[in-house]
Image 1 (cartoon, rainbow, N blue to C red):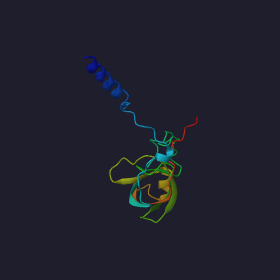
Image 2 (image 1 turned 60 degrees about the horizontal axis):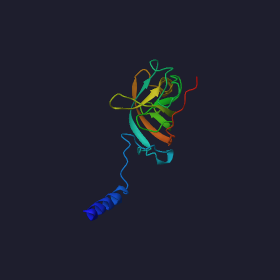
Image 3 (image 1 turned 180 degrees about the vertical axis):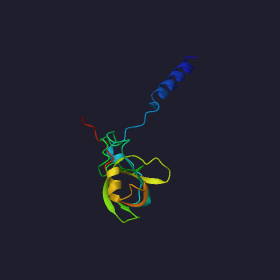
Image 4 (image 1 turned 90 degrees about the vertical axis):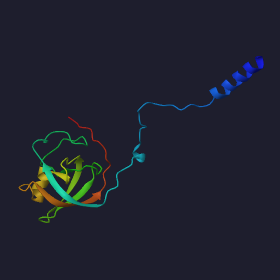
Length: 149
């Protein structure tokens, strides 16, 4: 009986020293900048663009800066924030360099939401939408900018 007890205690001691998995609930491990995975994008995209103006003027954009409807910025669903793009209006061949600072558009079939100022320079304010070609010049850092008051 004592031998069985010693054997049982020995087995318990051996198994109690084994590492057990640690579960931290639903928390995901923090990713560093180096380990960030980015969505692969083509360097050239073609699709329908629209613009946004007064309703968002003065509000914060996805990257944390204040939206200026007269600025030369745009919203894209997946391109990294602060990406520099050349947008060409395929209806009139006007071209402009913009920076992605927001997310959108949220209307099916559209690939870009330009600021009002960009839409004026690209010549499609009267139409509301236009077919554009987007060429990535430089991918952004996808960083959030803190808003300063």
